[in-house]
Length: 295
Image (cartoon, rainbow, N blue to C red; front, side):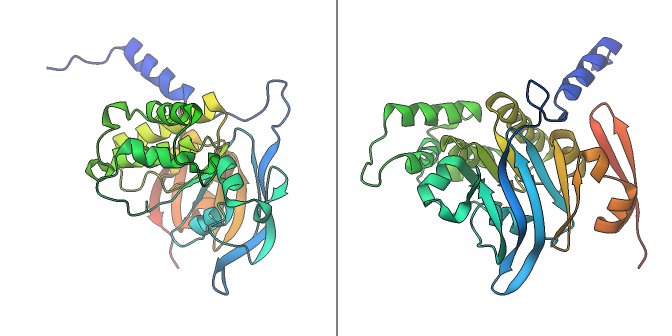
């Protein structure tokens, strides 16, 4: 029979959880960190149809920003605009103060990496290490096929960071959902970017693997100073790990701020059509839906 938890054990678990809750972001001297990615009145979508409308946002160096909102609100479209997978219909996006349209593909990939919601199809025989090695392509001339010592070091570091060492020689198609997510994250990390964009990285993962992935991102954000933008559906997890949230409704950023500022009953009613209460716990904010709103 399992022994009951003691008070000291519960306190230790609570302390571990509390240490991973994102805190307000500032540099060591207390000043705000510099911007790394800035969107100025950006609109965009598919063909002539605007999904995202007049959005202005700033991602600061070392910040974790999460986009939240109902299905179809424009979160993934906005992330694709940031990642240069779509071209804005109006407005401008700057990376390190420079319009992203001015970057070459390789220069852009050296600074910013994107992990899409649906990974691309890959050959059945491609191993984890081979997949991760593709992340070094932007750092080599097109005619150079062999890896340098730096390339090998970056690949191994990405594999270690994502806890894939024992799976490095296994074909990617044989991995579980959580392992495959980590493999594609390692591919992005091998680019050695300063900015990482992830579109619904916890989709199709059970709770354990969701937590493992987000804990990994939290460590990379903290230890490497990696700037992160995620699209997340799990409001509690978004509140726990993100420095700021962006609430998207019908393509517009209707609220931007700390989780406590964004996750209010009024905002949840407006953006998600639910009546809810928001509780403050040792593991961060907890959104408790009560009912769907009428009308």
